[in-house]
Image (cartoon, rainbow, N blue to C red):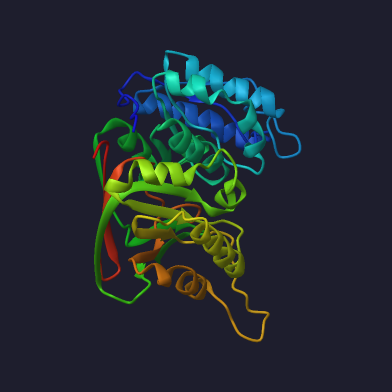
Length: 335
């Protein structure tokens, strides 16, 4: 596994839009605020030309998006790349990326979630480059940046990252509100501990990569099988039935081979299948889809689209310690 150089103050963050661009005034203001936040944190930041454009869900045609990403990756002054956000169609730029060239170049941090899984997951599997399923550039443009989002820079700056489950989340919705966040064990046990090489991302995207050359999961699992694996999964816009179908497909394709445990994030834009004679909810999807693996499954974790979100380093060696609704996730750049 190839780990990028640790991020240092004064380094440059490159921003490109491999999926959707930011094309409205509110988004532009948040982008400006995010650049200001970078300076406040001690970093420089630059944008590629298409970041503030968007047409039919993409910032530019597939080839242009690939070229802009490569321009940042080949730029020796850029230490990390953070897309503004996700989108829908990142996958159509993948055939235009030079994966051989990416393997030859010194690795760089790529950090994002949602549709950015379409970039981070292939880079880790095809090029052995550690990537981060975590916060995105526009997250840094809010008036008050969430402390969990700022942890992205800790993840890129340290050889070991220890994160605790949030326990609660304070947010603004017509006034300050607090919501409890409780991690749950699928089998109901109060304690679990497991470790292994971390891999995963947004299931909405992973399900489209299954069977393509951009998701050589069996080869990856064979290469690192002595480490075992922790899968970290989350979803957005998938209803309970689709979550189960995707887990079934992943399982039947052998994706959970050598897996020691699974972390599943709180779904975003989620709905139960409550219009059928029998309800079918998230617990049903996970229970039917994963119980047969006979490994710990922790769900409603702080991963993905539903804040707060911890940073997950694809390719890192991780350890999960769960006890009665709380958890600690430790990740090391190495083995």
